[in-house]
Image (tube, rainbow, N blue to C red; front, side, top):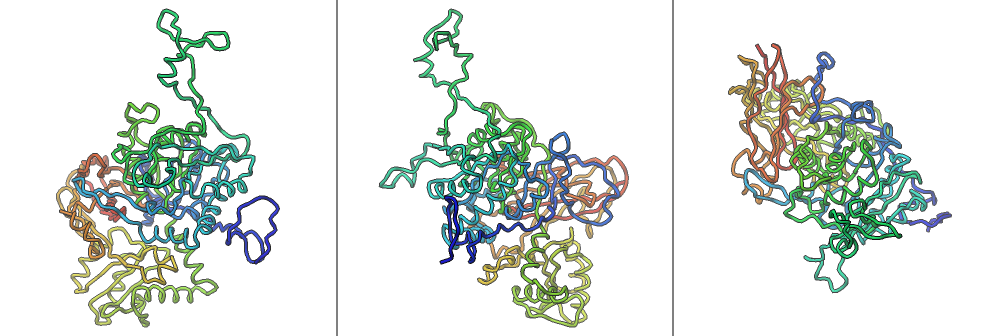
Length: 638
């Protein structure tokens, strides 16, 4: 056994130290730039001429200032939180005032959601995706020790992101709270441990109630500070009616109740109440609660309100790197804090986006008898996109020249797809049965021109079937290219390279599936665009979503398919940017289904253009699984 020189009390697990007894370094890949894939509730500012090429997104530069007044936009990030936090360090080291996390545990419920379907209240249970399964397996493949390693690496990064006056709350239950407290003592210092808060949801019924033992009926929040100069706003709660009746027994004649305390009158209406202790009696979130969004592990807003109110001030930056259903972000939004949320689950990001979009109709956290009645401040949806794939490519095909890297990348993809390499063509990379195969690059979308060139090679080879594999796609490619393929007599299939190929274990098990691109049809002022273009006879534009097709229904469970009655039941959300400027999608119009209102408008507009000219309309459709499909249409306004 390797000797480890331990000088302080600490928790040790098998992967914490290397074979030489040295503390294994925390990997900090990047920093990688974030792609801004969507801006929500942000006005479009004229930027004509800035983007000559169709980039589809801007890069977050981290230059918008540290207040709402200076241009700060809140951030919802899809991706592995370790890569996300490592990339945030460049701009936000020591700048986050409060971090709350509720990390997943091996309960089986961490990646399951209830998904409502269509116009009615039909529901299905969404199991975890392969990427979420990967996270689960990575976390638990060596049992508790791999869970601790996962959390340790992330807590170290969070500690670096915290401001000097910052606080950290880690939400845990009886299974690992004792391990994590020792770990956090090491990272934060024992002097910076503040409290172990006991959350008593008072819910001993159900399955856990059958245990022949004391019933588990509390969870813990470990509260640490970055230093001894941390923000803390002491909170009070009102006296109970019974306490008031028993204690404030005097009346001064005008209805004001008081008691004698330290030989002086203390009036009830001047009393703060009882200071809140470290045992919190906050009810659990019932299944029929209005704020429920379908997550089995969802926490009540009243719990997060207490955390945010006590350990941050208005305008402070709050983060949740396991944001799940978005409760922390919703509460931070309502309480005037800036926020950053991150999750690995694409569906969690979609649910959180909808929750924030409809926040004005939700309950106010300060006065729970009132509706919040304010729109969410501008926020942006980010990911690491191609940069995460570039990291994978560098690690997988390292120590080789560019030509060899490209050869091995193509061979790897073709093998996963069940195809054989094919040489002699500039735009064809392989062959699968009677179909020729083209493989898109790691760091750029497949373009219409690339598909046209591959079709030309396909015809010269005397073949009539072509499969295109791509990570990302030029906007409108599916709609524009299929009619050309039909005219040329070529059976064309566009298949998505899934992020699951980044995981060696999934690849080894053969679980990688290449889905066909979904596609949709839109009518503009009653007319179907041809090749993504149309002219209109007036300055008002109305869009109608006319069809949505998921080609890979054979890979969707029968339980889901039998509940789908019409094509629009596949659609959960769609949005339009009427003046796309080759930058980032601005969510200018949106319709989506909510828990209370399952109907969704299939008509967008009217939108009025003030000036004549050529414009691009960017349409984004998101299906019930949280997967988006987009197209760009060009119009000329008279």
